[in-house]
Figure 1 (spheres, rainbow, N blue to C red):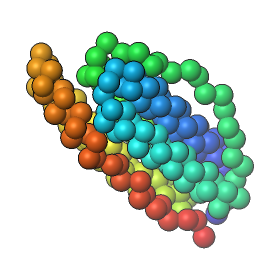
Figure 2: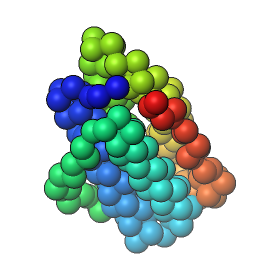
Figure 3: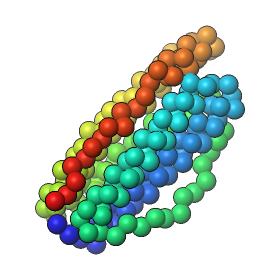
Length: 174
């Protein structure tokens, strides 16, 4: 199931978006480390690992269908935020961008009747629902915690217990 040039280009863009997401979350991790929020930092460190796993999954899929993987330059990222909520707002917006990109690639796969790509991408659509819900939950909790440093401390401790589900095992193309 060879990829069209258009689909291969879109999948390669996604590989690089996932790599950029890892880098973005590394910047957020640094912000939280520098500001004494160890568990927020841990939360983003786990997300760095998850985004790298996603990039690897996309790379493997491209290779499995005899495509060519390309790596692009990654821009620098922010390591300072106005508040924990500002960092999570940025994370939420980024997850929405990732979701939109994956849905766009899925639409190409459907249009081109590339069923292996369609199956692969649907696992990531599901993954993004989970990612957006997780980020939104933290954003909502941070809204409630505004002006209450004790609540920020409690959220910091709770985030240390959260580990993202890095178990997306998208089916390989045959």
